[in-house]
Image 1: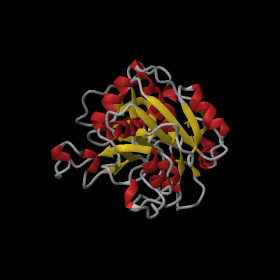
Image 2: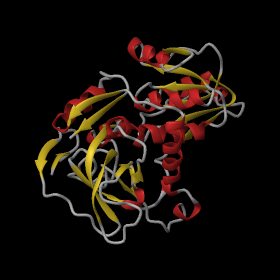
Image 3: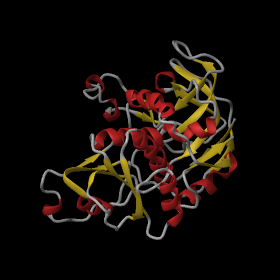
Length: 327
């Protein structure tokens, strides 16, 4: 197999030849058809997250075909298409796992961070955290659903039942979530980097009723705002944009520091909440909803060997939608 490997933080990934992996008990081996490139991968490469495995193969938006199954695996068969997300394993017995909050597990494994991920031709995954992709005939288009889609869906649930939703940062997650919000009958307000007319045009093409810069005030108060951009300065800006009782959801795994702000913009029962990881139920729900909502993804393809280029293009916002590695 081939893999793009991170040896040390803030260094380029290195292409390696490795023996084909063999699944252990309760695991499956997958031939990777596509692996999307997530902003979390940038955080892994940049060393922003503590506790990761090194060396490690990044990548946690994986779609591929099962090539081998380990002892004790049921529900997966050779040749089946599956998707693998960020949350790769949980202990099953901590307080959080036992109360249906496995996304907060005390001893998790994360795909592409604490276990090898999908920037490779093959990957081994926990069978219980690999999801059948029946009906998803385009693996490249489906790959961004496995994190950008899932975290967007969990963020939507955290935002509450409001109908006027602001999306700060219009990248992979937002361009998927806006389609779900449209399907739900919401009005979406898209906020992008100042001067990023391409992203604003993309948002409007997907149904945004308004698009502007992150520092702009929307034309009406929002019921909720979801922050996908990892910029702490946006939190007080979003608080000012939401109505009384509104909610600001921080959807990223890492964010720059949130500056101090006056209590007056939090008062009147506004809330700030964060979203951490996902649960398997989130994945099942979203993979059922995405086809019903007619979700399609805008992807830019890169060969596996160009993973470093894909990461840099993501860092600098050089494409719309999502980047996808295709081995």
